[in-house]
Length: 545
Image 1 (tube, rainbow, N blue to C red):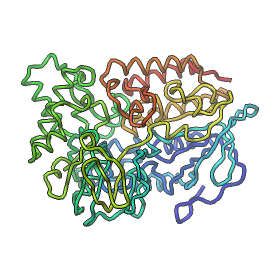
Image 2: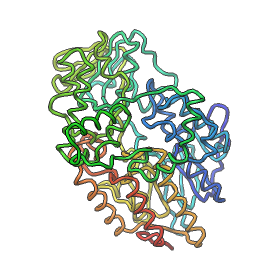
Image 3: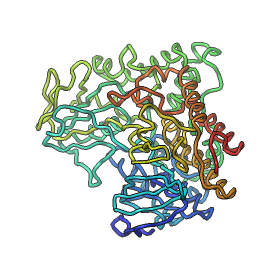
Image 4: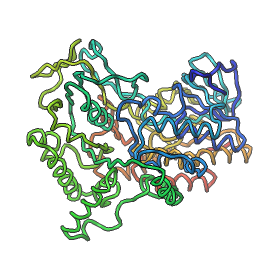
């Protein structure tokens, strides 16, 4: 379905029959569209945004960029990377949008994409083995298969702070940034939150603000980005390695083109350990996290050593010892690497500037927001702009936010209300012909996004093709498969230090939520092996009919 010139789509017929309806026009959804369309399925993608690109329509705040190097932030098809050139090693949101436009132009994806449309409800018709899906435009669509690719970060989390709605200045969340932007010049700005988006926003605000206050609850254990500008020659040289890089996306722990070190911490001398820490630090990005000693995330001694090395690096960049101690305290606030680590360029250095202030919310908590600023216990901060880098309602803000009714009288949100139950992080019992990619109990939080979108996506595409080839109409996950997968998720999580950190990986960022492992942290190779073992056994763990 062609989009109009303003990015919206013409109204579809009142009733439409599809083989597959996909929600989400990011990497995962568009991969499903490309593959299934090539196999002859009648497919359409729906997205609430006004452009394709998934989260990169909403994540357009200053400083927003990927935390993966550019070869990994593309589709693996050679015809989609051979002639495309990024200008930076870690591309900004503007270039990601351009990449999606490039892919769209190459493959004419927009003819099968309905934009500016929200899927409001879906109900399974047992007689016809179809999903009856309704949109906010009043359209009704029937589809044999319903594939949700909304990702884990589709619903911004806004903390409950007294008076937040009363603020008279400008306020924006990183995950719903106004398309027209916000001018930071000579403004008094507060950034609340020190996750990836908070770090990126603060860096940009520090360049233009009259005064910037960063409100910190937990220090940002951010790593050096190591940004590099790329000219045509550099791109040409990099592309010699692209075929090998694309292969590594499905075999490395997190879908990157590097892996944990083969050598053990305990086989190294103290000098070798320090040299290794220094090497991965200079490589930057996630190398000091996912390219270092494998024991870092499971062994307290190794984890402590990694934290001390990180802390020393941060302290060396700060002039004020008191500020340095708040940003990188002697007693680590969490185990190193047990939250997804942010990447920074001048985040720590900016605290040496006269116009930047750190507000420690543990020592001086926020009491309320007023029309003119933020009142903490001990101080009033007069402000023009409040920026929220407070993250997302991970997972539960995505798939179950749609009113999905299965065959047993419950909605998916009700079914998951006492804890997530999935078969291989891809489907749930009682909701036939429904798949989700990059969702709960998959490696979503740890893995590179495009890598997981493709490799988990291949399994979904293969399954739908198998159903057609065998002339089958319904596939439904079993409770036994869900129980097996839940135990697997817990088993790989419990020995690690991740399970001992309250983070959004366990729902810990949402007040009142019961903690559980929302993601599979055993790595992509183990995850994919489990999925494909099921497929090889005619989709063991599912009832096919």
